[in-house]
Image (cartoon, rainbow, N blue to C red):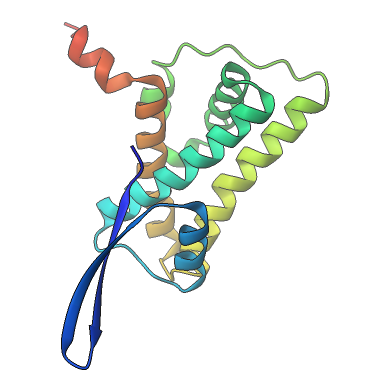
Length: 159
C-alpha cells in the first residue's frame, strides 16, 4: 500500500484539504522544495518509502534476493546506524562480488542511502545527528518490512 500525503491549502482564509498518493515525482518535488514531515516518525516513514522504492528498483534490475543481500552487505559495513541487532536476524548470504551487477547494485543502493541522508542535511536542514538518526529509523523500517522481522516475532515469539 502506497502512502498518502495530506495537504492543507489556505487561500484568502479558506482552507481546503487534499490527498495525494505517494509517487517518486511528488517526493522529488517535496524534497527539492525543502518540505519536511510533521514529525520525526513521519519523516522516518517518508525516508523508508523512498528507500523501499529504490530497493524495489534494484530488485527489478538485479534480482530480488541479490539486491537484498547487497543491501544487507552494505549496512553491515555501516556501524554508524547501529543496525547490528536487526542485521543479525536476517538470513542473507554474502552476495557474489564478481561481475558488473555487484558494482552497479552496490553503487545504486549506496547512493540512495547517502544521497537521502545528504538531502536531509542540506535540503531539509536537519543537523548531521538528526539526519543520521532519521536514516537509522528509516533503515530499521525498511529492514523490518523487507525481511518481515516484526511479523516473524508475532508469529514465532522467541523466549
